[in-house]
Amino acid sequence: MLLTEFTTLLKNLWEKLMNNIKKYIKNIWAIMPMHTKKEKFYLNELKKLEILHADNNQYIEIIEINKDDYLLHQGEKLNHIYILLKGKVKVNHINANGNSMLCGFNSPYSIIGELEFITHSSIINNVIAYEDCICATISLSKYHEILMNDVFFMKTIAKNLASKLSKSNQNQSISLNYPVENRLAAYFIVSHKNSIVQDNFVVVAELIGCSYRQLQRVLQLFLDKKYIKKTKRGTYQIIDLNALNLLGEDVYQF
Image (cartoon, rainbow, N blue to C red; front, side, top):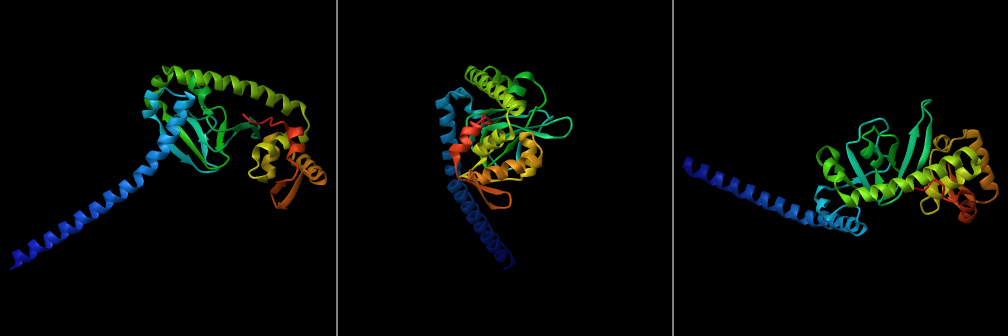
């Protein structure tokens, strides 16, 4: 009698276990196609742009990065190289005196970490997600040599570095020689989302290389000229984008 009851109990437990496993597998298969479809879309985009040789797509991991998360930390070792697929990232540099200076913004399909990849140097600038981003990432500890021998990738890096060098020289000239009006206008141009800029403007002053008092004066000037409108603390709506474009000319856009 006890043996029969024990056998029945084992049978019931086995059936429950198998049912749970079937449900788990069913849920996994329901989720997987969504991720596969997303990855295939971005891998196809990379293939069209010839950023990587198609044979090397297998080494890519597609990841999501939340707003304000760091992709790269200044001074650390480069462990991954990134290809920005969606969103925008902010690049800044911390000077020896501890001040943060805005270097620029990267848009989709730019490569992040390419200079350190080529020179084997420590990370030069912080790279921070300005909004939620999607990136392709490749582990350098595993695939450094493969990337070094990928003609498509090295050609893309050369183009990327040439473009960034040109923009960097332009940005440096702007920062050193142009008034705060131009620098703040440029910041509004590249930072707005649906004509709204929301930020900590104490930090913005550091990023564009001026004092907070100077920045406040220029903000008031923009308000008086109706280039922008303040909607709440730290938040402004762009009213006259053309006027800001004339001043800023997108000088911080990489």
